[in-house]
Image (cartoon, rainbow, N blue to C red; front, side, top):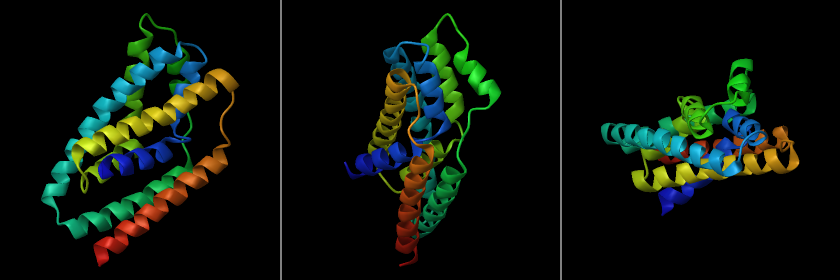
Length: 188
């Protein structure tokens, strides 16, 4: 349960203002929300399953104190990445806007590819090195889906984004706090 709650919270915050959220808003302006949400859930579950398996393997291979320090430094990096921000480039925006025979597969593949190597995938790997893989997998998947569901709601209902600067700063602060706590734990 602890792994679930930590993973849910961290990934939810990390996803706010991420390019995946921007993609969700773009898709939401054009397609049915339920189809988008199901496709995002399927893609996220696959990417995060892969992520926790990598994290668990790394966790077994490295001493716990080293993992804590490395994870803390990674979280500080995620904070910087969050402040730098993500933008949809022209190709990604075109893919999101393009009509297809199967909206589910279009959205699912777009999200799967967008998440490979993304900060939420890397954060999930980091979390899985030190926490239960099932709780981390379910928590990180649901955290991301919840954040993207918020984007879908915003995209369909309001047609506008949440204040990006506030989201970025809040997410970065969260990463810094967790990063510093992990480094302190590893150095004890």
